[in-house]
Length: 136
Length: 66
Image 1 (cartoon, one colour):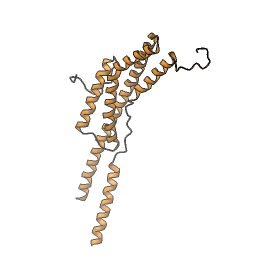
Image 2: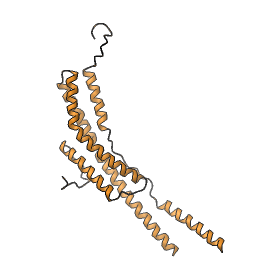
Image 3: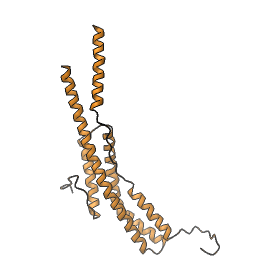
Image 4: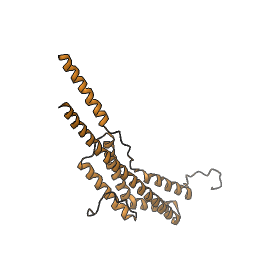
């Protein structure tokens, strides 16, 4: 009887551990992919800014051109911050040994897909780690 | 008799605690999103503006307009 209880307890602990481990691997892969794309977007953002500065003839004009650039890119960075926020909360839970429930996973997928729309709109591509087809 | 039962309970609790410790996965190392990407590039662009169009703060240090 006691050995049966111990066996059941061990199985439950193993299953919980597996869910956290699988989600941790997935969360890490998503972070790696997003960080690569974000770095590429950052380089491109700066290149565009420097190209605009080449056309500027005064400081005021240069600042106005960069303000325009920042306005155009604001949705991209907002989507990145949105995903970072959702992903960060998920990772914090995983680091405490808690697997994300369906609502957490849904929030991660939504934020990823929102960021992907911005990335594709900027002419870059995302690793196909989340299925966003049919959501746009 | 009672001593044996108490000892059994204590040992049982210790056994379960050891199992929990064994079953708990190590804290996973997970990369975080670098959400500060924009800031570093903004800083670089601001520095580039300063380099190309230095601020005129009104002081003529050398008296020659430079």
